[in-house]
Length: 551
Image (cartoon, rainbow, N blue to C red; front, side, top):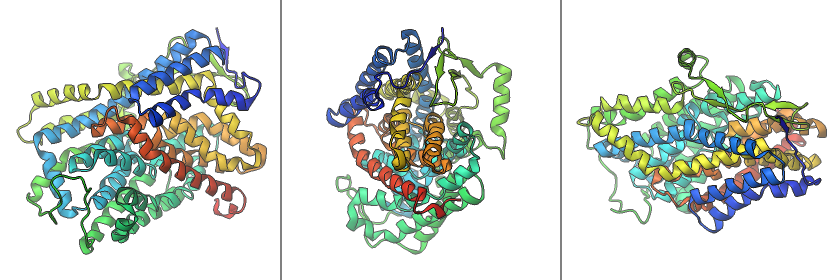
């Protein structure tokens, strides 16, 4: 029996939205006030959402349970699959001693934690975001920073903050492509607008990171390097998004930033090397490279292989390697399956969609083309270059990694279950419709709607799929360029990535802070709010006073 979503069950969109937000309020309270463990907060959040979906939105209990289970399994695969394999690669490099060589090679280039953060969290993380996305960059870079000696809370927090700049073009531009698909607007046109919004944020993110780590005074000591990183990234992002395509802005920006910053540090060094005050042992000055070039390349080998693998596995129309993998999956029957008891049984309604239409529910069993499989393969190949390691130790390390991540696995699964029940019950659309009631002020709220979507789902892609058509409809009703609000959904969404419970679970898993999700949430919350308010003001100005900025 089919069931049609209801978006205003209480006959007041404001009151309905307030009730729909209860699961989010629970998450905020449990993480931000009670400082609860992530899996405890997630359990209460998803439980309350299921109850509300059935009792208030009138969703049949069978559909509600099926939607929640669908989301939880999506949390396990492909998302947890990425986290487990990424941390496994890191654990192997630590256990084998190769990570000590990586630490020394970075420290010899710069022993300054501020500059190491720019290289790894900002530049290298952007490359991984551009090729893989979906939590991969935070999992890898946060683990690397902890291995280098960073305070774990700061390692997790700054990697989450750094991940804002590249998210809209992550996974070879998938968020922009999805925004185009759900709205019918040309993806390149959306890319141009995002490319005229995000660079304003990208250029200040490096400074934001350093100030967060070390304070304003210490940030000024490395201002030249900060400016090089910010300008390299923002200018390249603008140029690629506007004049090349929506697939490559992250990759080109990261590449130019790494080369530019590396070259700059060959001719410039800060007067003072900065470490965290609580580091042990304390900093003793510039570190000398203790290893040969061959040993350094070998130690970095797993991450070089990883970067190449995730690039090959990405949905890259130029290489087409993923298409080959998808072809193999079809031959083996490893494709998407209709989720039982849900697919086509829920119908979305006006005004969320132009006319009543079934809401598909699929589950992908695309093991070969999953990003986590690319990381798994990079780990397997790494065994051949890590000296005196072997498959036995690698297998043991893999199962230890799963044991290490058991609570983050549970948390991520439940958070995705929460996202799915809110989507399929119509609760997420209720929240979105409440924003569209703001009239001429809607352009200011458009990025906030995208921010909310990413907080709910952990994905800019999912946020665009959830709210893209609504953004277009609302803009047309108030006489604003719909391309702007659709683009703003993605640009604002990037600011929500750092507070998404899914992202926080990945970060705490990578840094050994399982159970401290509330600490990381409080660390990133104000940064997230400040950034999305900035995007809201920019979008409002571009809608009216600064329309000349739009393509």
